[in-house]
Picture (tube, one colour):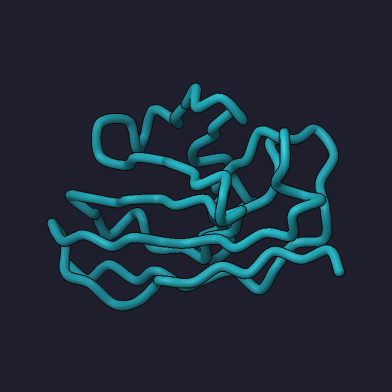
Length: 115
């Protein structure tokens, strides 16, 4: 079964940290660039960070220096370490491949940052 399952979200105060996890089916994960995306209320989904199968990473300017994406190829899991969180980071976070076409989106995990 092809699936993506995100976890690790929650409520945190501004300046705090969270670590998100995404367990992917092997058919999705293996050899693919993986990405974390987020969708804030009333806004379109946006790309946050990507990581290639060999570990090269890329970040949106809004999270550069605060977020770190990583992957465990043995566990078919991609992570997003989020530090120095800001209220504007509040969103539902999703993982998927790096695009331009995507697998079915998971339910995501909600991150709420209070000021």
